[in-house]
Image 1 (cartoon, rainbow, N blue to C red):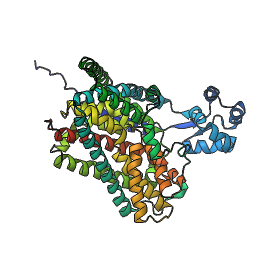
Image 2 (image 1 turned 30 degrees about the vertical axis):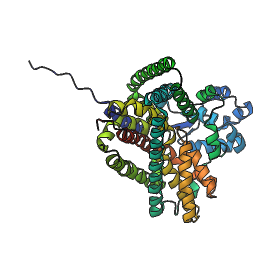
Image 3 (image 1 turned 180 degrees about the vertical axis):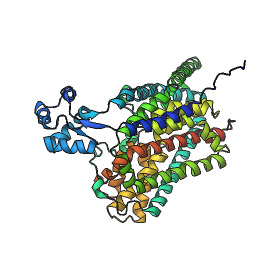
Image 4 (image 1 turned 60 degrees about the vertical axis):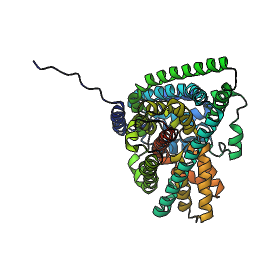
Length: 476
């Protein structure tokens, strides 16, 4: 009788890729519809919508709308634009109808919540333990300069790539201005570069923890780690050991959460695809703009960063890329470099052999301030809006876009759609209409996936290049 060998377990990145494909298929098979039903009223009451508005929705009860746009249009006609604007999120939630997707989307919500749960303790413990392991202040200064130098350089290369392609392809010429969607609250979220710098120093560190203010948390962690090195030896050793231990525990929790990545990604992507209004016509109408952004990101991802890794870092870039498959797929699916950070740290250390000393310093910083993909996208989007409105961009204006995109990408927090908020800063800087953001809103979530993967890839290349410059021997 022949011996049966146990089946080899599928590697995690293959599990994630299969989950991604199945999720896209699932989302296409079960598109989201909208309908005001009996249970919709319970949601509206819970969300404290006025009784008068709820009564006004009665005429469209029981009618099914195939897209969000059609539903919004019907509700606006029924209750008036003013009441809709005030209660739009509650009404959309109440009218949402997609049982097959709701049956699995909780997995994505739970996975994202678990990742977000560990971000702050992980960043805090990793940065403090990283800084205490670096040793002297001069070592810290050298590492800090290398890290910031790398991040500014790659963001600058990314923006230039985007600028060249958007000038060559000109995707905005002849764009349909009727595609515009309204965007609420972006201007209110704008912050000047001066405000961003001042807000780095938190008034209350626990408030910063509560609001996930990453720049403030990183500043506090670096300050705390630096001054651990200045206290008496017995306290220094005790605190260093404590934060090293906390970091080890956080990495163990991370490893546990990583096991559920395929399920989480299935839930997230299926809902994202199902919720897209008329995906095919959207892709065809915005194909030139999307093609320009994706082509520029691909050049940066597959050419610029690998060349830097090969010639400056002296590493094998595509071997390193293979090692980073899990965090890259996760970044693509979640659109959050912050949520992917635990997986990035795990892959950079375990698969590519970067020391914890380097990764725990460079990667949390990178997840917050190194936004190559976002910077590139902001530049292309601003130029696209200018072309769509027929505004001629002079070389000086294009230079302002490059510099503003560079600064804005540093201020863009590691959260989904942050780049959209920062675009309003760029549009203001070159006197372009803010309504132009509505042109790119429909495809922003799709492009967000591509640019987040680029951000994470750049962070991981940075960690490997800096580790090699510090004389470390890597597995790549």
